[in-house]
Amino acid sequence: MKPLPTLACFFATAGLLLAADAATKDDVKAAAKSLADQPSYSWKSTVENAGGGGGGGGRGGGPTEGKTEKGGFTHLSMVRGDNTIVAVVKGGKGVVKTADGWQSAEELANDQDRQNPARFAARMLTNYKTPAVQAADLADQVKELKKDGDTLAGDLTEAGAKSLLSLGGRGGGNGPEISGAKGSAKFWVKDGALAKYQFSVQGTMSFNGNDREINRTTTVEIKDVGTTKVEVAEDAKKKLQ
Image: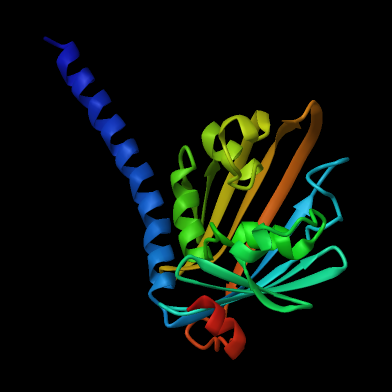
């Protein structure tokens, strides 16, 4: 009969550990929801590529400046190489500013110029996630989060790392093969609000027989919560109706 208390202690401890893990993930989700509930906010997203040939290097991993309002428009300014791409998203639809005026994601998807940066941006807009949404999703892709002051950090699951390596790209036979996927995520929560988050991914992406080593870190910093003003051109609004 003596082993019974030991087993009871074991299961109790395991239960506490699982509860603590759930609590830290819930902390991130609550902080993300708090951000999403704000009238508006801005952010800056930067991407760092380490090592040779890693995911594009300096060829297009410039910063993205974003502004969003609750239930309204999201305005994006993305630096890609020598180009700055301006886009607007609302209700799952996106438009991009081009030399020919504002064009919808659907219109640009039919563009035959595969080097057109606006065409690439349009593809991204169809599944675009604002930081509040992305951070909540990211928390679910972490094995376990550990708290240290205002930060929570942990390693990504293999599935989570694969998804982020391919930038949430298409699956199935048309998508690249990912191997050696791993990564980590870190969240900064201050006064119950999400202030910043970062995720790093490493692995090998194989497409059409070509291997590319990727070591990429994305950092998103939140600012001007509740005071951000989102200004959108009338032509862009019309395209989104």
